[in-house]
Image (cartoon, rainbow, N blue to C red; front, side, top):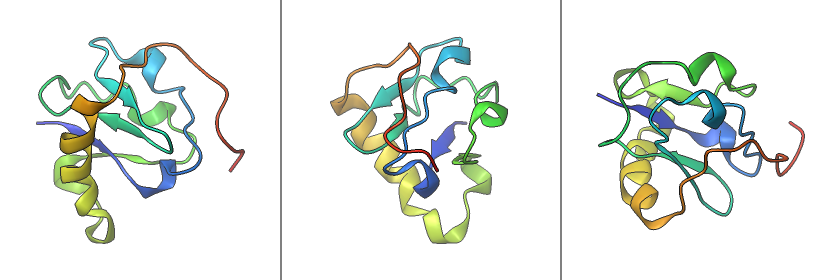
Length: 92
């Protein structure tokens, strides 16, 4: 099981979620963060930390954002891991 970063994170990239992740499974793309599905331990620590409510359990990803499940799995291994809080791209 895993969690998925979805559309609300795009062009925003708050990083409150990464500092609470006990397994460092967040990866930083240019416009969005990704969760590596093989590394996520499904602890849900990140979910309440996201100010734009962009993180969902894979079984609860809204239908309109279903493609983000595959996108996270594809892009996380291609991006650098992120473990420290950074300034967001934009205030939402």
